[in-house]
Image 1 (spheres, rainbow, N blue to C red):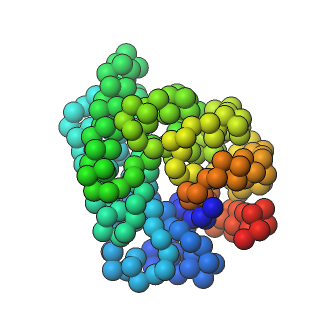
Image 2 (cartoon, helix red, strand yellow):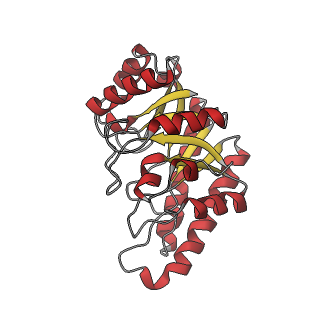
Length: 251
């Protein structure tokens, strides 16, 4: 299994400093959250490091499920820009969120779900054309977020012939067991963080309630060969998480 680190814990540290630090720690992958301050990524800078890259498409001010066509179109464009960025930095994975229900949108949930699927299809097709694997992420337990249920994520990925980013913290927050989390063969990318089940707190791995020992054992049994991305809340949680993984996986 390949170990990666999300810039979530390290922002707004300059990207060169982030990459240097991760390379010094012998981390294999960096997942760059492709929004400010990492919205413009210099491929020459990234290429000067031995780290491999995955790209997380932007979250802020983006909603590919919006019932406002102008907003939806702009959001899809932002995802496509992340796909272009992935091509330029030699990445083959882009993580995408499915969108959310606006404050006044509950009456239009069917339309919003249709827009999410339409947008994901458009982004997936664009990714395929550019040799990029798009991975749809499952969401935590917030009412306004789409695709919180892992079964729904699997069904959408099947319909689009796409792939899944399994966010373990999100899945645990939605009361899925480790066995249930790994049931879809569409899972090609994984985010790791811990929580107590009540809130998606992005705590250090092994610090709260998720049974990572069982998770790692199950991942080995299914021969998972994708990236395990540590996506935690701050530098201290990152250090604690990497130490935990190193100890558990003997790497």
